[in-house]
Structures are given as C-alpha cells and as structure tokens.
View (cartoon, rainbow, N blue to C red):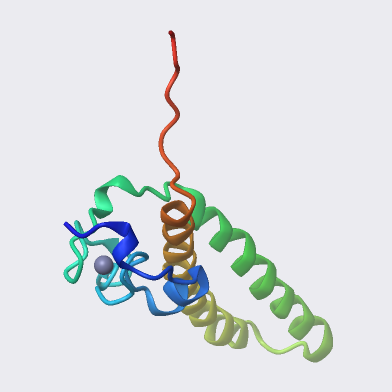
Length: 126
Ligand SMILES: [Zn+2]
C-alpha cells in the first residue's frame, strides 16, 4: 500500500462531489448509490476503517425535510393545488434529493475523517 505522503491532499468538497477516494482522488468510493467499497481500486486505501455511522442520514433528513416541506407549504399556501400535485412533485423530489444528498454527505464525512485522521477513542490507563 502506498504511503499518504505520495499523494497531494484532496479537497473534501471534490471528494464529496465526485465520490472519489479521499487519498488518491482516482478510485471510486461507492458500489451503487451509497454502499461503501472495501478498498480503493487505485491506491488500495482500506475503507473499512472509515465509518460515517448515522451522521449522513441525520443531515439528509434534516436538510431534505426542511427544503421539501417548506416548498410544499409555500406551494399550498400560494397556489392551493390538488393533493395529487404534491404527491407528483414533492414525492419524487424528496426521494431523489435524499439519495443524491446521502451520497454527497457520506463522501464528505468520510473525506473529513480521513483528512483529520479520525480514529475511535482509546482510554489510556497508564
Ligand atoms: Zn485511492
């Protein structure tokens, strides 16, 4: 496996937008929509050590619900369309925005963990 000093630092925003490896910027981070690969195919970085946990879904729930519910309320108050319009517009919007944002936020959190050398806490008893 290559040393970290062999790679220039990759900006977290670039990693989040392109879902690329936080070390080399070449390999893909996900299989499918948001399933993490076991390792980078380009540099061999082990992805099993990074764990965004429940952080990404919480951000996605808060952001998407604020935006979509706000837009639905505005649309209802301003135009008073039928209920089917809300289902037709805001249902797919909530699903699509959630899937895209989940991938974005997950990649961003992984990139920040890698960049800041985040590790599980260890109690030093010496
Ligand atoms: Zn890599």
